[in-house]
Image 1 (cartoon, rainbow over the protein chains, first blue to last red):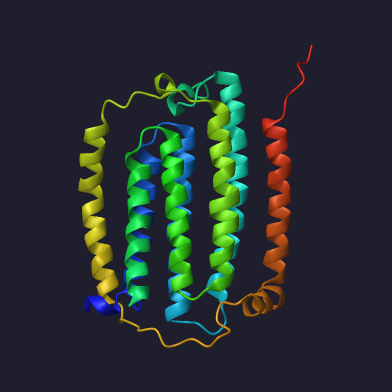
Image 2 (spheres, each protein chain N blue to C red):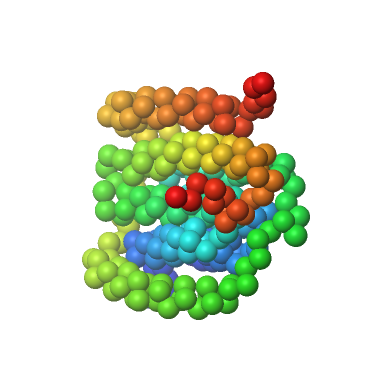
Length: 108
Length: 169
């Protein structure tokens, strides 16, 4: 793979998507603030959607289904952000904290 | 050649944004890094010649969703002493590298095993509003409507969850 055909190549987009996805998973696991975990989840969705776009462009361009999926991912991300942020606000109101480890009252 | 240059810039910026999100302690810095990632992803989409998704990524994702997140972070007014202490940061980094390195090697092998499909030149219509819209409203109409119901439900849920509750006596 010569350097010049870098952007006409499926693999580079897949590698970018994999990097974004794995950084998102790492952030989701290691963040301790609720809002940081939410932002990391957004990064996971971004990594998935760039995979859809790249596969749509390079392997199955005729019915542009990959772009439809990216649209749906955007809608799901909007819903997730709205619900997650309102949960964060409600928790902050009750506990005065955004630390996920303070919320252990439900421990069995 | 300008496309190559743009691709390299956008790819590097996207990865830097993700790294910044992982490494930043304050959620505000993480959110700003995520905005950078989203904008450079929009550039990558435009290099994939998806015009509609490029515009929507800028307006909806980098505009609306990220400003919602930034607004909530500012609303919570998080100071440095509110942040949880992360004494084991470096152990986390080390453990993360140890866990992720084999997965990354596996992924690289899998990607290399794929047949390298070069892009053919797309017609003018690829990724335009009309073409994507026709597919969306003909074949994906039912999921589209279901997504609208999902957005309605999440709207009502956000109002119920974050709205002010009356104290019941």
